Length: 505
Image 1 (spheres, rainbow, N blue to C red):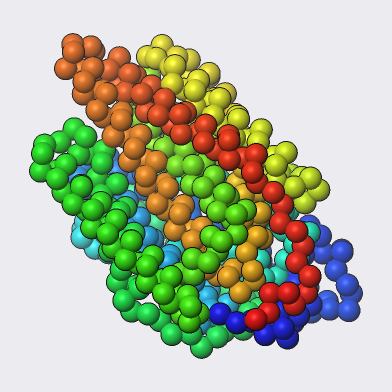
Image 2: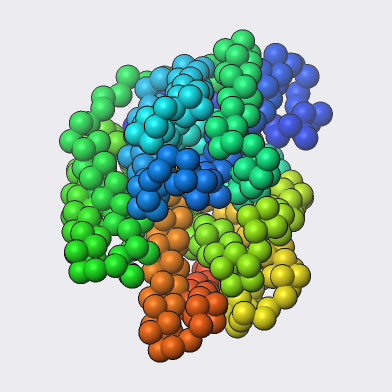
């Protein structure tokens, strides 16, 4: 996709700093400063709301099973349908962000999310609730790539770290505190209040956006390749569905295992065909997801490290509560409270990590961060049925601190390494990788946990000891994988500032 020199110059001249750095702006462009700053904060706030919703349902599954009279397999579709929709929609966002304006994309995303939230709140039964989650996911899938692309377009390279620190709050803290908020709500109110509390916030964000969000990018007339969309849907959807069934298949019969592998096989073949088609379409600048972003080594390494970090985070979010509730016998509210400080730590550290990135670059942050994450995972691989909850609290806070040191530098360095005309595609790839990595990490750890627990139970161990053994095995696998991130962290570098116009074609 060609970007005229005038366009690159115009974006550079209108670039807005991070909210904390408005004083650094040239007073000659106050209108652009206020406009861009306002858009950034609106996108940050809206994205926080929609991503918070992604994990807020996890604690509600048992309550929904009782109220809606459904079994565990059906209830999991409330999360699986959301995740599958995200996987199908996110790869298309690269096209959407090029084809339509910032304002129209924002309004569409928040309208879909608000409609889905309203539908969920008044859903008469399980089927309508699943449809509502799909509608919510359509809006959620668009918001994060929109935020990332807009920030990369508006914020100068030397200010991106601190702004990406705010993005890290959205990406890491929102999913981390979702189960805690859900636990509080369910402890006192009906499950519908999960949506009734979110709905007015979403509507306020939509109304504010309609009034204040302005167009900060220039749409291009690009064509949508329908075959790429179909291959993407079967590829990412099939892969994620298969991975999501891995935990269940580990303790189920041969039929479930066969279905899992068929889904993964269809996903893998479709994904391979999707990649080949994108390579062909790139020659005409018509790719749905431009894979030329991977020709930049910093982006490629950052994506690998983000995948491992995301898999670790989502794996721990799922496995640790199981351990706390099934082995240590903590209730839902206590579990949520124990996990809350880690999310707070990530939120507090993120802006400081962003400032440190601007000053020192990613390596001094990512290396110790990856070592902290790996060390905690190795320690978790040693826990048993007598481990103190306070030790687990300290471990979780340390793990979150390590992840906070990694996320902001990886996002900033990775996206900053690609050419400006590839920002929308890079943002879509980041979102897609996060979904696949989160599902893969969860599936792998749950499968290992289930298999080891079943084996130990069959050997005669009590259920709590067997479950503790399964948890240890799951964290051992995560710890081994984390060593890859430790090695890769030494190869992350800060992209050099790009002189004006050098990316024009």
